[in-house]
Length: 321
Image 1 (tube, rainbow, N blue to C red):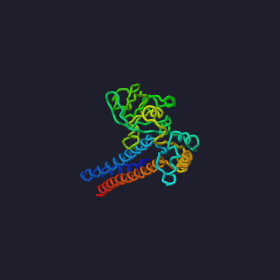
Image 2: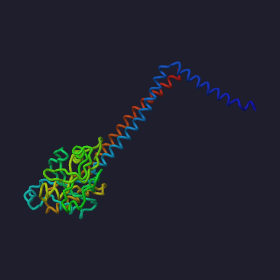
Image 3: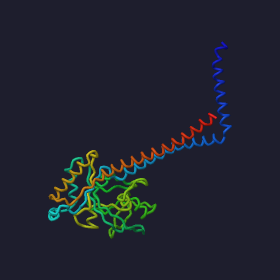
Image 4: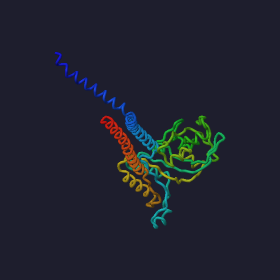
């Protein structure tokens, strides 16, 4: 009976002796042990920090890109025809108008929504403050095309467009500059010489990691119905651009050709416009960002690995002495 417990006792003694010897070696080489411990701690901490930073940056970047409102979006804007013969026939085209939005929206395949936009710069004043900003005359579908939301109030609707109502949605930064912490809903802003009633304030677009000139100017600007823009600010049927949203992100080039075909036909065969594939540029930017984040992950992982390796070598050297 007693003999059967001997191996366990010997094993326990060996383990205790190993622990005692290890602690003795560590105590006998305090400086080296301390430096080794610091190396291991820094390596482990770097791994944790690396994972946290990379994941945090990824979340901020993708959230920022999503709120820019350019996923699946293409811009159609006016330009002078490149072909000399088309330049001579340009008078046969009525130019870019809101009617083109109806053509693309009703006849185009894989088109989710189309918005007509006019843009100018005017002084917007309210509450004793004034700013010279961009004023956007838009159709209500602009909110669908660019995934726009309001943090307060409501978005422009079809009734506003049909009745040419003098209502406005403020960019979040303009609202802060004009009204500070006061609630702007229901109050009046003067756009040029015309008063408009504030019905909404847009949410923040993008973030500190991801933004664009378009969204920054929109957050500093004011959006009103396109019909009201024509009636009270600047007349005429011409528009600055169409913004088109497609659901077919896997065939953007085909959608672009379809838009070009429809608008060219609407303009009697004159190519006095261009289609900018913003959606494709966003996809390329996303791939570039993924590559850069991957490179940073490799760099930080290498630094963490080196720190852990140094710590491991230090521990081995302490125990071997």
